[in-house]
Amino acid sequence: MKLKNILLFLLLALILTACGSTSSNGKETGKEPESKTETNTPKKIAFFSAGASNNYLQTGIEHAKKTAKDLGMEIDIFDGRFDPLAQLNQVQNALAAKKYDGFVIEAVDGNQLCKIATEEAPAQGIAVSAINIELCGETDNAAEGTLTFVGGQGINVYQDILKKIFSDNPEGGKIAAIGGPATGTPYLNFKAALEIEMPKNPNWELIGLHSTDYTANQAFQVAQNILQANPDLDVIFSNYSGMTSGVVEAKAAARQDDVKIYDFGGDTWAFESVENGDIEQTTIMLPKEEIEYGIKVLNDYFNGKEVPNFIDLTKEEILPGTPHVTLDNIEEFRANGLPEY
Image (cartoon, rainbow, N blue to C red):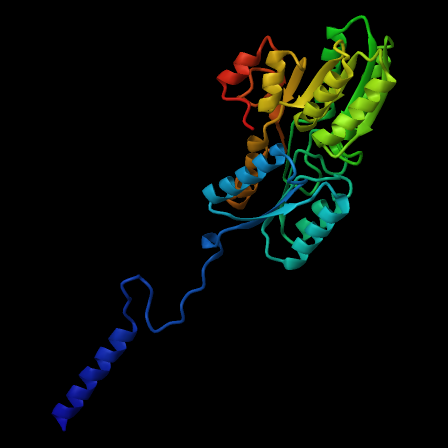
């Protein structure tokens, strides 16, 4: 009996020892598997793009995917289609889904998304960064409740463009401007710049500020009408290279060779057009840096780092001290690997 009891005791001890041992992966056996900790779970973010219908936006979307992947984050992309209501619905649905840690918002209408981006999303613990388009009418600053604003199309940038146009043509004349959707911040910022600079230059007459959908076809039609109605027009400013090509075609069709064209966009076509004399100047856009900063700010915030309130793309090191590309400095931009789309 004693031997039997001893054997039973040894067997029981072996069983208890096995229950308290660790497996080869370091976890204790005999316990429920530990749930994945928050630090090991990839952060999930949403990027609300203003649209996806042109090269600039498509470049930003593709770089958003790359940046998120490089940082180990999951990302969903939403195409706002330049429709303020559609984008608002997208953000509302994303909030209702309760599966996102952060939003990057490129607003179609920065005022339309003001409350949901600065109050409702933060109330759910969602970190928000804004790119390209200011929220809530802020200028060169993050709206209260959001982390940061990444921009390069502020009113001051448009003022600089107008100052360049006026200094290039000191004799004055007539100027027409073609922008994107009338509710968009770039359109509104240029309008504000006109209201500041035009009174300072009474020898200039504004023929009109016209809205489009940013496409070359619509810009061609608008420019054609402007040129036909104003045979003495001196300057057209076009607020996106993708539609400026239509303005150049309209000028050629009208045979109004004296009209000067100034552009905002700085894509490959615009650089070539500066070189061949079709346009006088283009102002650079940096779609890759823009979205990359917007996502990296979220990542830094998630990792407990301080983040900047405003990132000014016109001061980027990749630029040769200016965002404005002319025939005199174009090689400096090319030496820095620009344009990037």
